[in-house]
Image 1 (cartoon, helix red, strand yellow):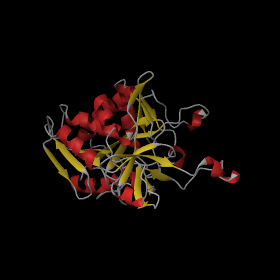
Image 2 (cartoon, helix red, strand yellow):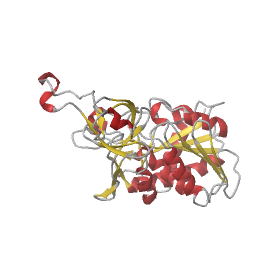
Image 3 (spheres, one colour):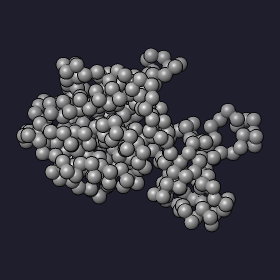
Image 4 (cartoon, helix red, strand yellow):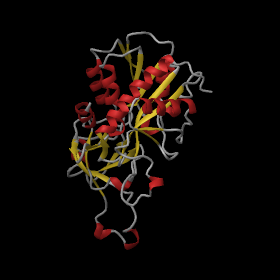
Length: 343
């Protein structure tokens, strides 16, 4: 999975522009999938037949898109105005290298020079940022870029420290890598896999995929914020790298069924898989759309802890990815055969 994670991290695909990521996944699973379709929302839905057909239909979801930028205008001086796509903090943006459009035009995010910033603004985060692609003027820039083109952080994937990796878009290319690995493995039973579009701009697209599949149960495979860094009190860390898969009881979009939450923790304990509880009600993921689809879907989330989420340098620990993958596989089989009443 590490090599798949590296390759996925280096692909560009903001919300609504996931084509490059989707084509990569199709290429990686085409020999194993029994069927594939791309729905009108841009989700890739894969069916893989297993050893048996279980009584309960299970769908696993990971989103393909990443946070980034979309070009809104080309200025007279050749710099590019943009809007953020998804929850990108301006704190992590200025001075960062980016690539623009399918041609990957190199650029950098610029701000007003510090010597021109009034004293009253020097401690604030600049909002009037732009992308500099080295163009001489608007006409020069328009030969390469136009409004509606996307831009992504330009960040290398690096292994470092004791089993850590750093790269962009690990939210949620880690989940995509886990599902690709599952599809290419021998499955104990039939399963559906959704590589969804548009999660970073309000969820929803995964809901259209769930409406097509009509699963009884769903597992959202995600990453979630780890604040286990210097200066953060223990009760605010949310989760920790190295402590395994993260199980959520609630976030800003979903209250997870208690029995599914407890089942995930019990499976981890029984199988010696490192797992932890997300200790904050924060964020949200595709469970918020999936669990309300059609007649309702019993949904649980398993996440990989990630430092510096939505930045050019997301950090994961590979042991946590492995633990999450093991738990997801066991949980998918368990839910496929368990008709537990989750009300």
